[in-house]
Length: 385
Ligand code: KIV
Ligand code: ZN
Image (cartoon, rainbow, N blue to C red; front, side):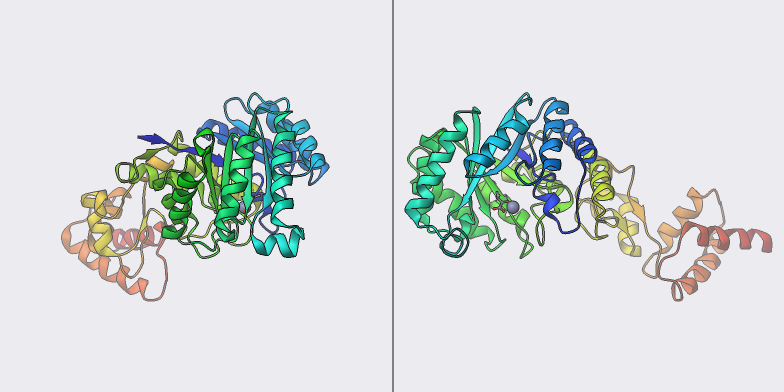
């Protein structure tokens, strides 16, 4: 079984979610939770972005006990100096430096040629290596870059001392077959690739960030970059909870596992949502309010007989206390009877039939029936007796 490293970038790429701004205290709290959850690398921020971010990274470097702490830097000496200063107190510091390698980015954003980008990437990795042992290098917009150019850049930065090379699908353009092939091609065409770990960093513009990361794992990637609740620029990044639970639920097929204590997932998701001020959509995989809720009678009956009928993982395994029966117009008598019993009512079959009719009538006028509504029906029926 291969152990895939989880690189969490909630505090860097996740914080690039429009409207999110975490202070140093909030970031340190989230970092401690990530550390306890078993994340391998915490990307704490982009030190050159602001004084506040620099201070937050410094604080995180002091409080994180087990994980590597990474600080992002453009491939520029000033950014790299700042990144190093922000993490030098960490037990396991990493400088993460990047430059774009796609024709589109080089032409319109960097206004540089391939040769210039190659030289800057290699020079800056060598410069960063002079400060820090652990260096990650990213080819920004790798999935839209010319293959031969990426091979050349990766070979050069590994020679200059990069310990991890990251392949981002920066604009979420790739699809799983294609992204998996890219990782395989890199493994087969970069002569010194065995000397570095391969990381992947996928964005979710087409809703494929987790699928692309999974394809990369199958193709041999060692590390996945992700964020709690899938936060991030535009449509966000690979969601930590999705990729981790995919490896848990389909461990044999993927032949991959992680170091994550999955019961920490739901509480960490709630903390991040609260501090970031970004609610989690109800139907979000794993951590959405409905991820373990059952509404239809057929489903409720199945789950009450045996939860595996409609649940591929237990709510407890991700840190919830139990699943949730939602009462609405699709709910059946089985779950309704069970609910009455749970509330302490022990009615005979006739009474239950009668109450169930009233319950069904109520569902036609009310979208969701709460416990209080069922209480009301049950108590009314006691008074009638
Ligand atoms: O999406 C991206 O390319 C990035 C890099 C800086 C790794 O976030
Ligand atoms: Zn990104």
